[in-house]
Amino acid sequence: GALILQNEWDSQTPLASGQGLRRVMKGSKMVTVAGGVGHGIYGNKSCADKTATAYLTTGKLPAKDVTCKARPGAEERATPNPLPIPTPPGLPGMAGRF
Image: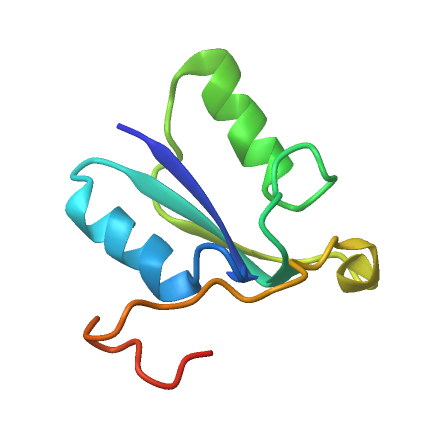
């Protein structure tokens, strides 16, 4: 199975998209960084690093999905996406998300 890393506030892959990927990838687990901003997670000293490193070094997924909190002040260090990614019309549940 795959390990999916997801910031709560990711302009390139919204939380709903990460959750949808988790649902369709049977056997996968997801680490959600509550309050996390931006697209980069692993290697940015996020709370997801420990779980991701364990997966990469052992090949073992966590027993269940994990939610952890972003470090205070991490949003100031995140590199914002200069322009929002347009959402194609007609995607269910995406109206008005941007």
